[in-house]
Image (cartoon, rainbow, N blue to C red; front, side, top):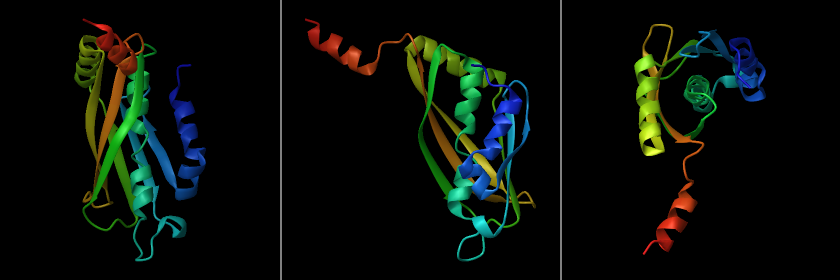
Length: 163
């Protein structure tokens, strides 16, 4: 099923986002730009009075995977594989994260997956405060594979049978 931008905005009502105050604020119809916002409140503030780190990470979690699923189409498997977050300064007030995929990035990823059968794509997103200072940097690793590509276990089995 092809998701429409209004359906993705339903993610605002997904319990982990709803509970932490994460909101999709902007999304282009082609799924190449998404802006997410997190307003500080009592339920996402930690013991020392700043944004809870888990909420800062959660606001960046699913979006590159979703954008790639929508832009590559049904012939590809797309999964989050790894992530790392580096906190740069205390986050207070409203923080935002912007996710952008260019046509060139999409073509490059698609060509690599088509050529190699699978690949990992790496992305970095910054969480910014109201003064545009970096609060956190998140690195995402996305695993991509063609649906018709041999599965790794099938490749190992065929290699073991080869003379």
